[in-house]
Image (cartoon, rainbow, N blue to C red; front, side, top):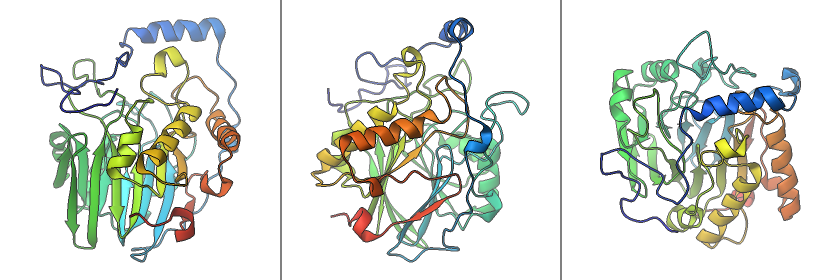
Amino acid sequence: MTLGGTAHRRPDGRFRNPWPDTEPQPFSALLKWNAERLRHGVPADPPRSTFVRRDPSFDSPRAPEEALTVTWVGHSTVLLQLGGLNVLTDPMWSWRASPLSFAGPRRWVPPGVSLEALPPIDVVLLSHNHYDHFDAPSIRALAGRHPAATWCVPLGLSGALRKLGVRITREFDWWESGSLRLPAGTLDVGCAPAQHFSARSTWDRNATLWCGFAVAANGHRVFFAADTGYHPEFARIGERFGPFGLALMPVGAYEPRWFMRVVHMMPEEALQALDELRRGAGAAEVPCMVPIHWGTFKLTDEAMDEPPRRTRDEWIRRGWPMDRLWQLAHGETRRADHRDVGRAR
């Protein structure tokens, strides 16, 4: 089923996943999930020391216009440098992914880049309002340190950002695109469908939209899938916004499947989505991929070190070149060679 028009909008002004059987579990299902955990237990996690932290090596204040670098801060927070611009995704620096400072999922690994060490940020891509992606303390700090940054958000989030001090926002609906004319250069931004939901409380569920983003500058095209379950639109995203040289794909927080299937992909689904992005764009080679949304917060029941193992195993099973799987440590920077990521048409 291919989405068109306004199928993701509800008559009451809220939003929805428009594909069959994609309504997320209600909050009451958390009781069933917790009961299952008590009965069956969960896989053992590795020692926290398993996840190393590396020193970043991004260019400051800016990379050359022809360069593409990617630095994994942790979870879904990535610093991209392309076209001489500095782009940040889903900024999350707090120690807990929670509305409370004393409870909720706690970081396993400190942020790979300190907030104070960031280069001048030109654009922030903010995908939705869940606490592990929309972190109010981080947003407030970034708004103070980088007041000229443009924040690209899905429908309905500008007001919440303005309350936190953000000055410049640009709201996008699914499939909408536009060019940001910035002092340091031009960034083309496209808003892609995602299968997820929004909420910061029990009464605002789906009041704002959720999405992924495609960005392009100086011939480089990058896809940020953000939080999403596997859905039918990846080929069309590739056709509309690709071909991509690099994709940031979520591979964690997927168990138990009866609860998480709709909102988070397993590694095998993430790689299938990556292949559909490629085929939709008519590209001969699969994009380089940075796995995200794993190894930072314990959100679900799979072992913390399982997502990268399953990602690598599926990559090998598909016979894809290993140098195109960019499995980064927290803080690690990868510099793209044009032979790696090619040049967008």
